[in-house]
Amino acid sequence: MTDFRDKARAATQEMRAVFDPTPLQLNAHLSERFGADIWLKREDLSPVRSYKLRGAFNAMRKLPDQKLFVCASAGNHAQGVAYMCKHFSVHGVIFMPVTTPQQKIQKTRMFGGDQVEIILTGDYFDDTLASAQAYAADKGGHFLSPFDDPDVIEGQASVAVEIEEQLGRAPDYIVLPVGGGGMSSGVATYFGDRTYPFFVEPKGGACLRAALAAGHPVQLEKVDTFVDGAAVGRIGERTFELLKNTPIRDALVLSEDRICTTIIEMLNVEGIVLEPAGALAIEALGDIARQVRGKTVVAVTSGGNFDFERLPEVKERAQRYSGTKKYFILRLPQRPGALKEFLNILGPDDDIARFEYLKKSARNFGSVLIGIETSAPENFDRLFAHLDDAGFTYTDITNDETVAQFVI
Image (cartoon, rainbow, N blue to C red; front, side, top):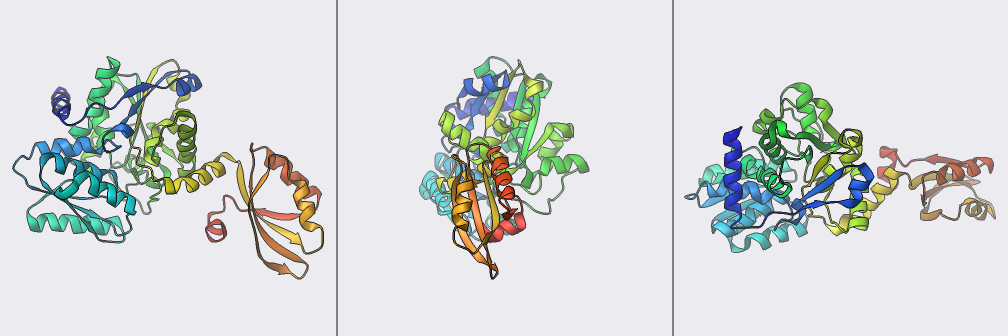
C-alpha cells in the first residue's frame, strides 16, 4: 500500500510539468440538499475534460524509448492518449469504431495534431479493439489499455493524491464512477481504509457489480452505450483484483434515464457541463444520503465531453424519469368536437409536445400518439382521471420500451 501511494505521488509530481491539478470545489447546492460537505473533484476541467490523460501520461513516461503507442477508444481515452503523444513527441495510432461521432474524431485530432493517426474500423468496439491489438503486435507498438494496466491505474490514482493535498486530509467518503475500473481502483487503493468508497455504474454497463456477484470478471451479455464513458462490458482483471473485496451493496447501479436528471440539473443550476459518466457520482449521492450526513464527501465528476446535439435526448429522458413527460396512445372518436373536448381536459400546466395520428383503428375511431409535458408528476393523475370520466380510451406507453422504440 505504501509503495503504491509513493508511486502515485511521484506520478502526480511529474504531471505538474504538463497540467495543473483539477479543482476540488465545495458545492453549496448539494451540501445543503444532503446535509453534508459535498466536494466535487472536477475532472471535467482537465485539459481534455476527463481524467484519462493521467493514466496515459504515467504509462508513456515510463517507456521513454517507445516511439509508437496504439490504443482503441471512441472517446476520452483516445483524447488523453492523443494529448500525451503530442506532449512526448511520439507517434500514436488511435483506432476508433466507424460509428464514432465526428465531434470526437475532430477533438482527438486536435489534441494530437501531427503526432496521431486515426484509423476508423469496425462497427462495434470489440472489432476495433482486436484490430488495434493486432496492429500493435505487427508494428512493435505499445498497446495502451484504457484501464487494465498497472501504470494507467497508478496514473489515475493521482486524482486521490490531489484530493488529499487540496482537502488537507483524506475525505470521509468518496463516490467514484466505474467503467473498466482504472480510476476507481487506483483512487480506492490510494486511500485504503482512510476513506469509505462507493462505486457507481450505469445499469446498462454494471460490470463491477456483475463481477462481484460472480467472484470474477464476467462479460455482460448486452451493454447500453448511452453512458459511453462508463459503458464497459467486462471489468479489467487487474482492476477487479483491487476491487474484489468491495461489499456488493456499495456497488451502486443507476438507470440511464435517472442520470440524465443530474446532467440537466447541474447544467441549469450550476452551469456545469457533464457527460453522462461524469454525472454518475453526483446522482448517486441520493442513494447514500443517510450514511454521509454530516460528513465530508468527495464526488468525482469524471468527464465533461458532452455533445450538445444529445441535449434534446437527455432532456427527454430526464423528463420521462421524473414523471413530467408521458406518451400515450389515445383512441379518439372521429366526430366533430372530439378533439376540442380532449383539449379542454388539459390543465393549465399541460403542454402538448407531440400529436400524431397513427391510423384509424375502426371506422368511427382513430389512434393518436400524444406526448404531454407538465410541471409536476401529480398533474398526470388529474389528467388521467378526467380522461376516464370523459370516457376516453388511452394507453400509457411511456415505459413500454418495445412500443416506444417504434412510435416515439
